[in-house]
Image: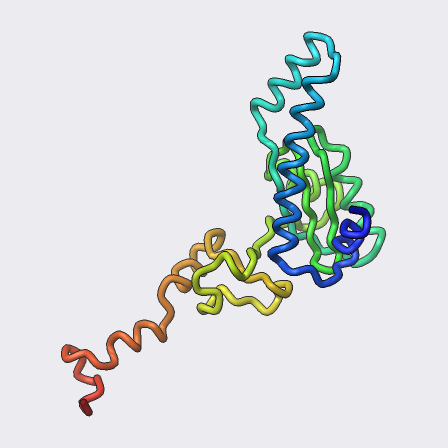
Length: 189
C-alpha cells in the first residue's frame, strides 16, 4: 500500500480510472473502519452522543480542490492548513496536478475557506472530471489545454460550457445540410 500511496504523491502516470477507483475504495474502507471502531471503543455517553451528532449531520465526503503549489513549502502549508480541521480523516496532495484531496466529515465550502484563510492562496473546487464520464468530451468548451492528462473540464459546474457541450456547431450543420427547408442546402442528390 505504501508503494501505491507513494506513486500518487509523486504524480507517476496512473490512469484516471484507477486513481478514481482507488479513491472510492479508500472512502468505502474508511467509512467501514469508522463504523466498526465506534462499535468496539468505550466512550462516555456524552462523547458518543457528540460523535453521533457530528456523523449524523455530516457524511463522509471527498473534497477535491485545485490550489497552486509551487514548492515544498507551499505543499506543507496547504497540508497543515487542512490537517487540523475537525472531521478530516485523510489529506492527499498531488503537487504536479496542483490538487488537494480531503476525505472526512467536512463541508466543501469550509475546506475552501480554511485553505484560503490559512494560506492566502486562491483555491477553487476541482474543475475537471475524468475523460470517460463526459458524453462529448471534445465538444467546444469542455476540452481544456490546462487540464491534466485524462481529464476534461466539468460541464455541470460551468453553465456556459454545458450549453456548448450539448450541441456543438458541427452537429447543427450536419442536420441542416441536406434539409429541403434550408435554401442554402446541398441540391445534388
